[in-house]
Length: 305
Image (cartoon, rainbow, N blue to C red; front, side, top):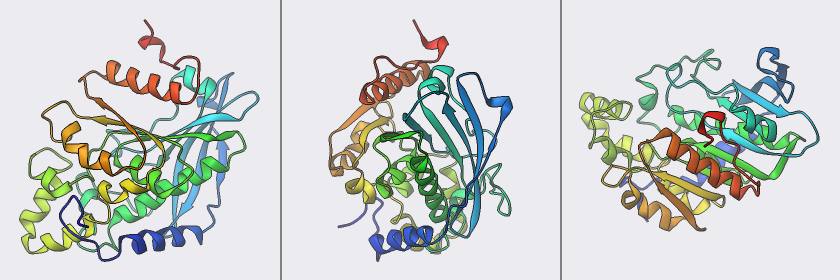
């Protein structure tokens, strides 16, 4: 079977088994400190430091409702960026009243940028021609470590843990049984080289830049990316899933994602982008609240009609 990016990894399963084994061998060594500025009368905010492979220290923002749990949990995976796409220090008050929320800063991002400060652009192609050295191997491990910690919290209802984000949410759901629900907007790691060749926008333009500079490395790059293509992970995703597709005709519309959807073992709901943060956001919030069995969505105040 070939990947959707057109290259066959020599040992996809072994690659991720080895990565997870390396992660399991390292204690997470959490350090937790309250952030009074972000705490309220209904939720307490914390800064959390964790150890991932390397070893490497990560940072995350944790919010826990006051009162009796356990509570459903929202795990926010980072988008591509460090300063322009900030890691949320909390969510809408209504959500923080009813959910444990946790947002992870992976290696290279601000607050987890010692000793490695990622370059933007540049992170996407760091170690690109070697699967063992590609920075995203560590980043995916960081995301798995985060959900392991979240699931370990006694305040969390282990039957309702949602991973929310782009490709990293998907890979985390595939590699960790702790994720029960998934809200994912594929962006970078699905049919990546072909996707990059259809755009000149960053961050995918980083790949085009790299291959223009190093055309002789294309096969090596394809080999590396084959370990990260979402299509390879599809059969391992057992979470109840909402995929946020692009609008019809866009590079990652529902038609482009069809092979990914068909490869997943359970039914997947697909929402086509409406080019509205309000409409798309409201849809995903109502979808997740419904799947969590909540009477109504915990919408931000300015979204309530």
